[in-house]
Length: 410
Figure 1 (cartoon, rainbow, N blue to C red):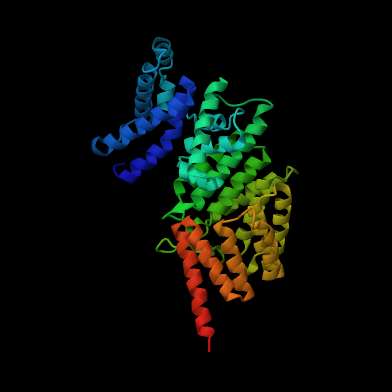
Figure 2 (figure 1 turned 90 degrees about the vertical axis):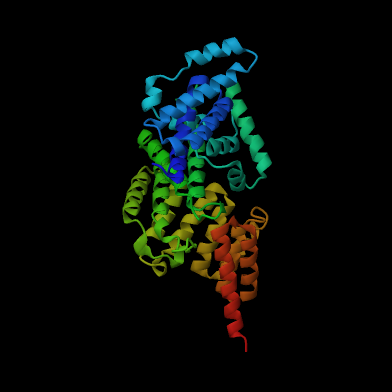
């Protein structure tokens, strides 16, 4: 591996594993993350010229440990902390194979943290998202998210809870936060919230990898199976989501022959097995919706009444405004655009300023034949999104509607 992109991918993959080792050994999340970042910078500087070492994980661990030790030596309790650092020197198993990523994931979803802080910290430490990307996902300012992440790391340090997998009654609550984190990481990878790329396969791939680990650990948990099924059924469409120039191709216009049938079969089997358990959760419902889309041979064959019913159940279960937004689309496909537009009215406050609300309104107004309103909302959506492919697609839609309107004028 000699290219810069290859090294960057390798460092992204190794970072949470190395961080897990340091947190487990030193017990100081904040300082450990700083040390790992310094080790990654050192690798990015040396490896392109010197080559990737035979054991890149071991190299990063040893470098991070040295950085961590330097940090400890600069503190007031120098002698006591140096003794702790000496005792915490990583063993051979650390260097050669143990993957602490899953434990790190549960550590980030710590009982001392609020769910929002746990999700943000995990996205930063395990998912590799920037603070700006996390802030976008939560619709808060970047400075607010930076403070939230910093406080989360300090709370973990102050709690004194050992680095390890939660047991007993503690696990279900932590598991719910972990699943939500993985869901957000996947979504950011499948449909990037900002930048020039429509997707970031390294993030969605990491979310799938971690969820597979969760499923192997908890094979009987219906929501773990449901989340993995949702990811696979959604990711199966990735090859058809972009054109030759990287432009966005919406679901209705995708070449379904390019969908990954193996992933669809695996996801369908997972959700079918999960539903046999009798208790249905939100990820299982979302996976069922994805399966209905994937099973349709064409957009005309899509079972929209079933999708509308499933979104109704999901909205009652979650109260999530984004679910309500998707239910409005399904309602328009079943009952006509006026029905969908009516369902959008209560979302003006909870989704104020969100580009997707404008994008959906534009689509429904176009279905209804109101081209002026459609153009206005396509343009508003394009101005609000921070994803360049989304922006280009919405701008193109506005231009297309305008051109059609001009052709229709006498």
